[in-house]
Image (cartoon, rainbow, N blue to C red):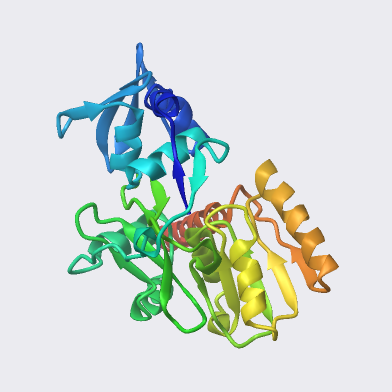
Length: 305
């Protein structure tokens, strides 16, 4: 099936306010006078209403072209993203028209991804190395985004979550054609599983609780949904306990309670783990900072006469 949009809906999408769209997607936008600025991998994109202009590339357009370029979507996908699920008319799709999932092209190395995850996010090199060795994390060519690969139970890639490696950018996107049931995670041998909102949160938690981590099961939602979790539980009947590890903010905890209620009805032993700060990466960075301060204090004491 595919969705057909009317000319009026297309005009509405093209005229939609870009700043509102970005804020709805969790992106950071800064006001500069009568205009706004958004960073594309560190490069300034000026925005005013439904119009945008890339200062470095010297190109621009309306809301639809913005979503196509920066969110990596096709024209129909961009319309659906802007207008929401209630727009358009569903039509039958032939087999040839079905979109095929393809992983982003790989860069020749992972220098930017390793640098971003280690230096900006505080993730341990050995943890990154395990996922990289299993071809679950790599660096894309072109924009050099971090790519987090989700696989099915047979080890076949079915999902890819892309994240900018620019420390000033919050850009992130799921590769088109990704199956939300098979997002980034880890398959271990234990009878429990840990659910997270995002790959970096999952890896941060692992760094905070490293002992025997490869024996555990982990899954990310790349949102606050339970699609990937439910798929994993269906694939692995050995799992008996679920730890819900979403963000400590309102949406995260509301989703936690909703998922726990659903799992309890299905007979799973369920526990909600809440990060001390907003998310597990903030917790990890806070621990890293405290350890660094303790080391500095210890060294300063040694240097005292």
